[in-house]
Each structure stands twice: as structure tokens, then as C-alpha cells.
Length: 88
Length: 254
Image (tube, rainbow over all chains, first blue to last red; front, side, top):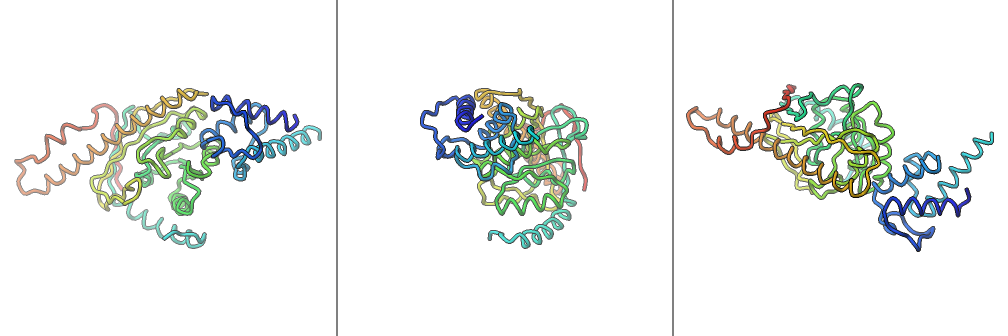
């Protein structure tokens, strides 16, 4: 799955989670202030992302995730790691 | 004064942990549970999420059990975490004001084999208002929430947002545990809000019952201190808020 597909999946999960639409979502949008996600929303989103993409996310990895771009970067890295492990 | 140095925090925690152990030994504790069970049970058999107000954060320290409690990531939280560690209480770091997602995730994943404990109005309030994190935790883990109300016959109250309670040495602390609240898995937003309100209502009721019970105990003690045993002062008011007759009651002596 490339970054565009990851972003599309993330948007779908966000809209399912919050019941809102995000037409202007971009990498610079902050999760807390821009999308108004509180810690409960974040955890729900992480759990849904893990289930949908089969990518376990450690709580420590969330420490530097502030924007949508940070989250997509994290998912790309984890996906790349997962693909390498499967290939090996 | 805010503590920032990790070494200073450890030293202060060591001293405070020791003082806390001595102080806890002077307290008498009564606990009453609505479901008739002795709480907390052996977590190997049955686990719960115990929810109590932030102002009563010290109360669970008296009852030794395998539990994990969420503490904020702040420097103040570090001191409390160190003290909890010295009292044998597991800690998950994170709170709703900062890094709350990390703490919640840690509780979801690392709390296995232990009870979970949460102050649903922490770390910054509003006082006695339940936030949704406890409902999410229950929904994801399948563990029922037990609302825990705490009352004190005598306590100092801090001038903080939560009016943090510190029971006087040689005083009595009472706990009233409400019926466990089961939360459906994959609860939607409406369901989460409805459950949040239900938890808040039951926690307030348990707190009211505990505070009433404590006043009753304090009134009886003062009555016993009077020379004459004929007059019952405050008896009518005390009888009007007696805790429920059902359920089990245990007394914990130091």
C-alpha cells in the first residue's frame, strides 16, 4: 500500500471514528488541535488502524506523532518493516 | 515547588513512601460492596476496572492488591509514580491532559493479570466529572467498571482543583463500591456518552453514600466521647443516609 492509499484508509477510519468529514485534510493538520482528537479518539483510531492494516503500534511510537503527516510516516515505516520481515 | 530533578524525585519518593506506610498503618478502613463480593478479588479469577475520584488517590494504597493505576506524565506524576512503585502498585504513565493515548494503550496492553484503577476526572478535572477514557478502556478490555466512593471521618482538604483528601492519622476511611458496570465491546459514540453518564451517576451515588457513612461514624464517635449516653446528637440526619443494607462489608485494620 503506497502513501496515498494509506492516507485514504486513514481518512476513512477517521471519518468512521468521529462521524465527521475532513475535506481539507493534509499532512500538516494536527491531530489534537486540527482534528480535535482527544486521547480516547487517538486510542480508538490506533486500534482501528492496527486491525485494518495489521500493523501493531507501540504506545511509545505515538510520542512524536503530532500531525497527520507524522502518523502517515509512522505507518509507512511500519509497513516497510513488515514487508521486509515477510520477504525474509 | 515543582520537583524536576529525577534524583531528587527518587529521594523524596523514598522518604514519602516510608512516611506513607507508617501513616497508612494508623488508618481504619471499612468497605461495603453492592454486589456482595469481597473487593478486590484475586485478579487471576476475576478482574475489574476500579474508578474513583482523583481527590481520593491515596485511598487504594491501604488495600494491597495487584493493580495498575494511570498516572500523568508530568513531573508531579513522576513523584506519585515512584511512591506507587514503593507501595507495590503498578503504574501506566499518561493522562488525558498530555500523552493520554500512550497511557490508555499501555493499560490496554500491559494490564493483563492485574486489576486496573483509574481516576476518571483526573488529572485536571473538572472535579467529579467522568471523562470517556474509562468507558473506552472497559469497552476494549471487556472488564466491568466498579465505581468506588470514598468517605473520611476526618481529612485535610487541599486547595487544589480536586480538593485532594489526606485522611488524619488514626481516622477512618470508608469505601462504598457500586454494582459493576459492564460495557459493550465496540461501543459507538452515543453509547459511550450514555455509559459515561451512567458511570458518573453511579460514582456520585457511591461517593455520597460513603461520605454519609463517614459522617455517621464520626457522629457516633463524638457521641461516644460525650459523658452522657442519653442524647443522640445528629442521629436523625445520620440515619437518613445510612448505606444500603445489601452487600458485604469488611473492615481492614492496620
